[in-house]
Amino acid sequence: MNTIKLTRIKEVQSNNKVTWDMIFVQPVARLILYLIIDFRFITPNVCTTISNLFLLASVSIIYFFDYNYYLISVVSLLISQLFDHMDGAVARYKGISTSFGSFYDKISDGIGFILLFLTIGYIEYLETNSPIYIILMGAGSYFKLMMGYSKFVTNDLTNDKIKKTIDPQNNFRFNLKKINSWFRFLWTCLYRLYTFDEADLYFWVSLFLLINRLDILCYIICISQFLAMGSMIIRRASTLKYYDKLK
Image 1 (cartoon, helix red, strand yellow):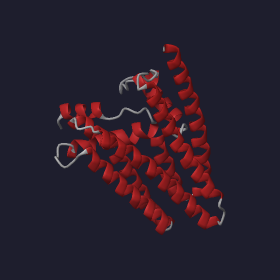
Image 2: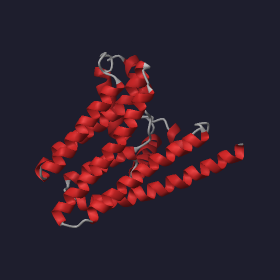
Image 3: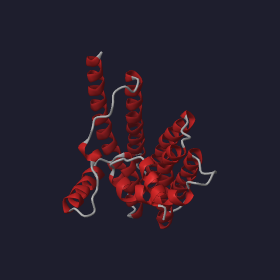
């Protein structure tokens, strides 16, 4: 195995300290990228398109088939997440980042979450004849999009001049030989998992699909995204107030 190539791939991967990213997405995507990244036809937009196709497949299985096929839906969803992670890494590795590619990726993420959330809400509505599940997932989609919008507004108003606040956990380097490194890694995983970050949402959706408790998932999505939206709006507002003081 070419360790230099593998190290280079690791460097260009987005280093999100999100539980599902750390324990599944990043390591698995790294191995896939090692095998395919040097092919000329592997481009960021190709990865985004593949991600979209697998997401559509997952949503279609949820909509058209019953619980017995949910495992296939989960596999498709996870493959979609892997390729969604890989598009940015491919762009940085090959030096072919484009504004259109970034736009395509962000729009795909937004539309993908809406399709997934509303499909799950609608399926649960059909099961229970209660519209509350459509309302919950519709609200969850709205809260999710509002987080993206607040980030866009903040970046636009500050012209991206404010650097991200340094999080000590983001500087964490995992050392296999040190016990305290294991404890810190596990603590980070447990803490981040319950923040219901974007990457972790795939984990939670997959879990509740497998145990066939979409009713609980609908409440979790709505409440978690509402709290996340409120937290983000407060943090973005604080960022803008800080920026105003710098003028």
